[in-house]
Image 1 (cartoon, rainbow, N blue to C red):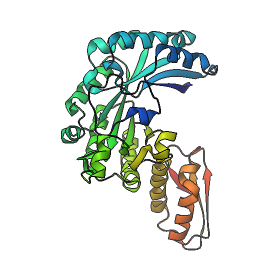
Image 2 (spheres, rainbow, N blue to C red; image 1 turned 180 degrees about the vertical axis):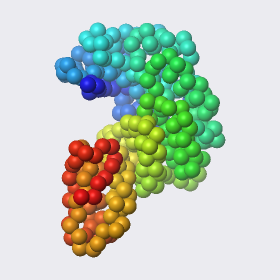
Image 3 (spheres, helix red, strand yellow; image 1 turned 90 degrees about the vertical axis):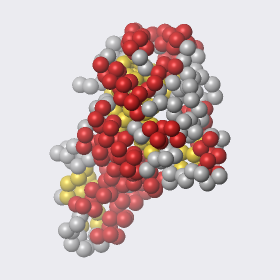
Image 4 (cartoon, helix red, strand yellow; image 1 turned 90 degrees about the horizontal axis):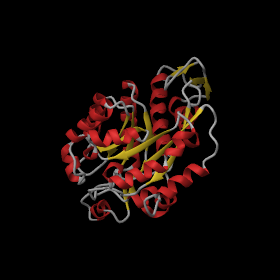
Length: 334
């Protein structure tokens, strides 16, 4: 049995970042005022609940470019995480970084400290978009870093953004197709959010940048999700992690919603149900079966999918039930 993974996030906002990307303020996005220290790492491990025998624990360094931090600081943080690895062979370390901050020596150093997963902030595979957002790396850098990480036997997660300056739905779909060719172990999809105080905020306020609305992002991310699902690439997150700072004014425009991923899943399931119900007679009593744990995706937030489908197809009733015979995102009309 594959053990359940529990992640302990440790934020190192802006640490090691060589660029000032137009969209970024990691202090606001992560909610962390200052980069974590070795004491913070030790405290996070000490404060964690005792894991079960069927649970793996991973400490994850998020919010900065970990491998661009001074090597001595990297080592200090990684050493502080070693008691977690000593506790169980199932435990591990994850780091997030830039594609142009990866080389053989760096990856081998990470491996020696028990790092098993590296997340790469690729954002786009279109160099024009990367230039417009001042990323400071190219799509080729992403491919080289990904190939090295996989060759060294580590798990690779790629992060992409939609709605960046210069981006279009077609370019985002192109980025997803390039990701699929790379064959990562998972992807994160982050629709662009206009965060107060960033360069993107100034661009939006002056009209140079048009915001990536929630509606547009939900529609696009639904297509991307299905592309990855069909290719067997897990989508491990869609949308920024909600925080009090973002919810209370930090996110001034763009595709920020505390339950963004659920909005996307709901849209995907709604479209699948529409296809399934095309030949249904009006005034019918309908039951749709979904895989275990997927009822909320089909129901939609505040039962929106149920209400909309009943109206669209003039149904007398619509029930959603779980079926052990169905897996993934399949739907079955009973």
